[in-house]
Amino acid sequence: MNSLVVLAMLLAILMIGLGGKKGLRSFITLFINFALFIVLLFFMNIPEVNPVILTMIICIIISFINLFYINGTNTMTKTAFASTVFTTLLLSGLILYFANATFIQGFGKEETEELSMASLRIGIDFSKVAVAVIMMSTIGAITDASIAIASPMKEMHQLKPDIDRKNLFIFGLSIGKDIIGTSMNTLFFAFVGSYLALLILFSDLSYSWSEMINSKIFSGEVVTIACSAIGLIAVIPITAFCTSYVLTKKTPPSHQEN
Image (cartoon, rainbow, N blue to C red; front, side, top):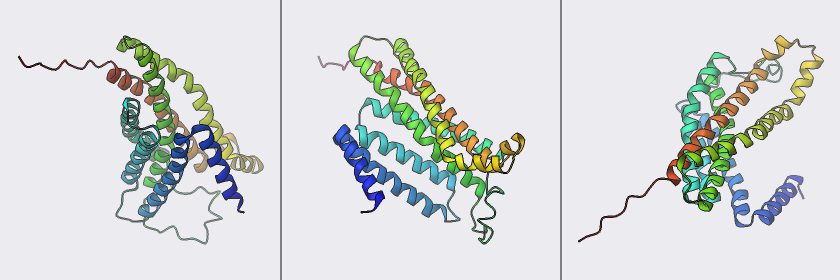
């Protein structure tokens, strides 16, 4: 049996065994997200399609599926989804600016040897592709942070229905402070793990510090991590505010007929 099939089966057993129906939905969501990624790659090859707008739409669909299909439709998922979409739209402008300002589009000189026999005249704007890559990299961290904050805030409101909006908002921020450190470490080690071979290559080639940080591959990954971290931090107060506002919103009494 193929080793990839064995790993997939082991993952499915663990997810279903621990998470039950929600674990099964999470496992199915992995394949749905992969299918959406294939759709993104297919339409990105069409010159008339804007990769940035397409990626934005795919990111919103991914967050919708990850939140509502796995966790159901409730106040928690609604506020988390709204916060995710708002943060992604807010972050897109920042990504566009830094991607263009740092000139990370295209390929670095370390990759030119592998691509020397290939033609790069494929009719695609590589600057927009670079923005699309960063946006796709940030959506996971933003979605995870939003649901991680909205869920305990909902539980707190159920335990203390009389809690006011300010204290509930502060509680949400305290949850956000707790997840910032671990989430930042996750982003950092994801970079180190993915580009460990590249760092070894830089060391073997005796790159100076200035040459390394100015490398297109290295700087592109740093911009991606920085944007993901900014999105992660920005979604915390946004989710805390939205969730506290919705949960403590007073429903006006219905008018009774005389």
